[in-house]
Length: 162
Image 1 (cartoon, rainbow, N blue to C red):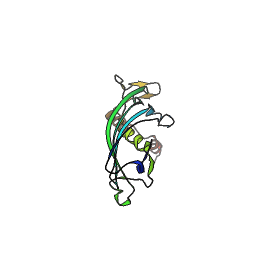
Image 2 (cartoon, one colour):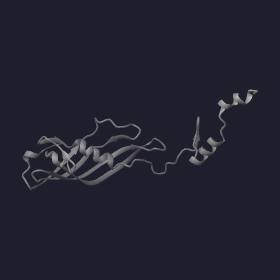
Image 3 (tube, rainbow, N blue to C red):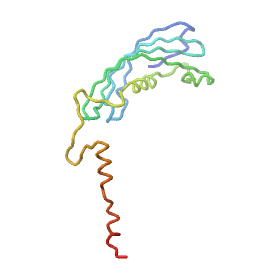
Image 4 (cartoon, helix red, strand yellow):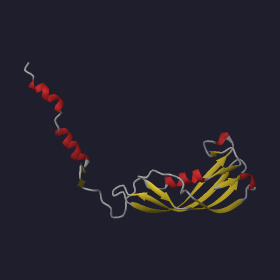
């Protein structure tokens, strides 16, 4: 989704609706499988040195349950604001973009990724207790086992007769 600042009048609010596709984008397959087409509604106001965008984003994200590795659908609907400027002195307050026409897709993708929970758990999913070749321990159980474990490298020293 591209926006052209030169077509926007100064100090006037423009309203846009658009659909953004992230299907060709590859994600970490252990965290996000896909993002459905994203509905983006936004208002753009060009104040001359700053382009202000008020975004409303809706989409469906397919994530991976961290317990069962099953797909989990996460509906997202949120509002956010972005500011862009071609003035380098405003870089701390705004995203710096030199061109009049620029792509909003990376910024929209960043907003979506920041709104996905860092730990995705499917409703009703529970941690596995144990399985073939592994055990699940609490941190206290692990530390207790480690403290009781004897280091085999020192056994040979016990055999020496000094």
